[in-house]
Image 1: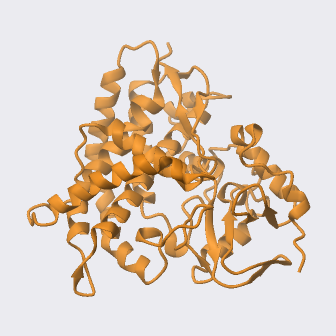
Image 2: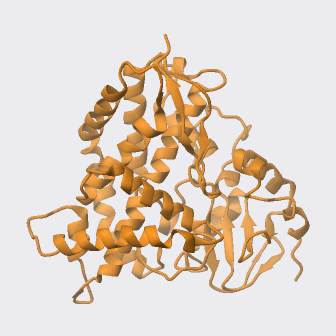
Length: 392
C-alpha cells in the first residue's frame, strides 16, 4: 500500500533552525499533511503520528507498539523501565511506591527548603539565570537524595544527564559513549557499595538488592534503572519549570497575575505541559504490520508519537495554539498514558508548584531579560539558559 503522507512530510525537518526554534512550526506542518506521515530525514526513517486519537491509540496498545527497542529514533537493546512487559512490570513495581502521591507529598518540606537555599544564593544579584540557578539544581538535588547519590557535584550529574538525552535522539549516539560510560562506571560503583549495606534504605540500595527469579538483579540492570529514572527525574522537570516561567514572564507578563493570586497553579502547570511539553515526542516500534489512516507501517519500524502536536489537536482543545492559563483542564498526553505513564509525573508537578510558590514570594517583580537558549536535542523542548532580573 502507498504512503500518502510522504509528500507532505518532505516539508518537515525537525532539525531545521526554524523548527528547532519553534515546535509550533513542526505542528503546523504536521496538521497540513496526512495523519500518518513518513519521515526520511533520519537514519533509520520513521513514521510520524500527530493527531490526538492516533497518539492515544499507540499509547494504549503497548503490545502492538513496543518500547523495548528504545523510545528514541535509534534501536537499542531492551532493558530497565522502558522495556516491555513482563520485564517492565517487574521494574516498575520495584520503584513505583517511591513516586506515588503519598510518597511524593512527603518531599514537599525538603523541596521548599532547597528552593529557599537556591533563592538565597541569588538574593541581591542584578541578574541571574533561572535555569542554572534554580530549575536545574532543584530537581537534580532531590532525585539524588531519593536515590542516595552524593550531591557534591551536581554539575557533573547534570552533564551526564544532558549527554543521555542527547544520545537518545542523536543521529550519531556514539559521540557520547565515553562520557556515558563514565556515568555507568560511577553508578556501578555506588550500586556495589550499597548492595551489602542493609541499613541503607535509599532507592538505589533497594534496586541493587532487588531479586528476580530467585537471583539478585545484575549490575547492568540496576544501572539501567537508575540512569533512566535519574535522567527522567530532572531533565523534563527542569524544562517544565523554565517553559512555564518563560510564558508567564513573556508577552502579557502573566507573572503579575500569578503573584496576585489570579491564576490557578494547577491550571498553569497543566497548560504549560500541554502547550510546551518538555518531551515533544517519543517513539515506539511496531510489533507487527500496522495500518493507520490508510498507511501500512511495516513490522519492526519506528513510529514517532508527537505529544506536542496531539496536545494541539483542534478536535480536542479549543484554540489549541493559544497559551491559555485559564483553560479548563483536559487530559493532555505529555506524560504518556497506560503502561508507560510517566512514573515521575507527581514529582514533576510538585516541583513546579514549589518553584512557583517560592518565586512568587521572593521575586514577585521578576523579569525575563531574553528567552535564553534552547536545549539541544530535537525531541526535547526547554531552555538551557533563561536570564532574569529581580525587577522593581
